[in-house]
Image (cartoon, rainbow, N blue to C red; front, side, top):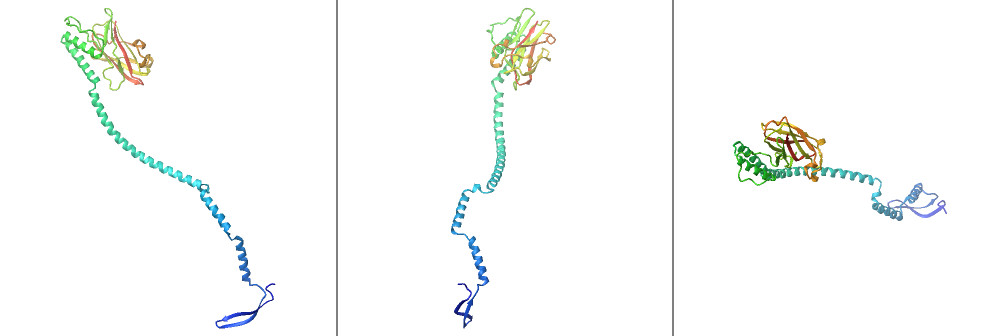
Length: 322
């Protein structure tokens, strides 16, 4: 049965405080407001969340938290952060490396100064320097004695120089005849040949090109007589190759210094230093010095390195007077 025609008896209408009116009410239709409320409620029920819906979303939420790295935009944002972090770390490292370099430079400077001073002190009193100084003083003394005609004294000084150089020497004679000539030859030099011809040989090992080299690239010869022609011959090579350049000077008794030869890679042939055995393994370099050898006396041959990857190892030097 519907609402229409329904008779309700005994309904009480409250008209106000202390008043009441009894009346029979006939209900034949629903109020429009009620109809609208019901429709709204029914529509809301269609989208209302059930406990199952809430449980399902909660489960999805928990899974999403576990799969955070798969979230949309997460990878790109993380990559951006990592790149920014990398740049900041690089900037920090660069800053502190720069500061560390300053500390290193300051510390190294102190170390360098300390040991450079020690090295200079050691070089100033090195055995080699003392030996070179002694050789120079002996050479000077020998000249002085020859000039004073003290031939016996000059011969003893010459003998001392040869001993110091390591060259083979015979026993010093007990006495020297005043008429005997004294040849003030360089350490290791030997004069040989027939009458009128002499070959002065110095087999002392030398080096042209070493830093600070002042003595072992200079060879001294004393010519007691000269011929019509004179020739300089030397044998040399580098440590590993012939890539070396230089000039050879002759200093005569009058003190004149003249360039008489040069060496360069195409003139040098021989084994490397480790394989060297005898001077004949090395190709000779020669120069005509007839115009420079005009009188007997002392001649000095000086080797001056100028360029190349190698210093010149000097194995043998000759002055041939023909």
